[in-house]
Length: 117
Image 1 (cartoon, helix red, strand yellow):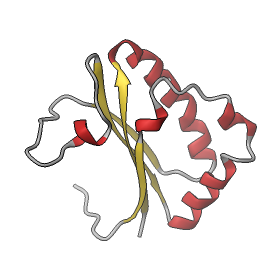
Image 2 (tube, helix red, strand yellow):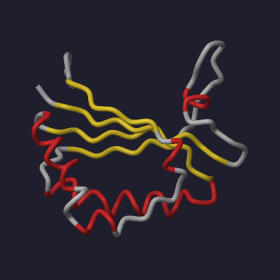
Image 3 (tube, one colour):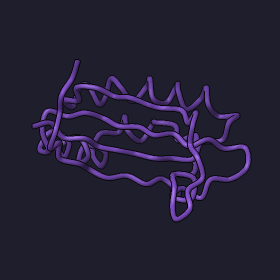
Image 4 (cartoon, one colour):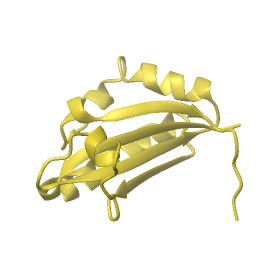
């Protein structure tokens, strides 16, 4: 089964174009390291919850939007190899980060159900 790297970040609205440019720059590297798909979703309907929500998860501030992203991998080993490359491949260090990385949440997920139309 596939493996998913998921990310949620607060991005200043003024940095939307820079964020998209950064994603476009990252995709060829993810692809080179074996990624099957890379999706970035700009928050459009991110309601406030009663107990928790995406906004609180990233300490969203005025003038920012929540971005929900994921990279699809063929397996965990491929994802882990790419993650390790971020310490050794200088191209990752050249990537722009047009958001506050301290408020990013991320994780890796083993796919347990995967159906497509």
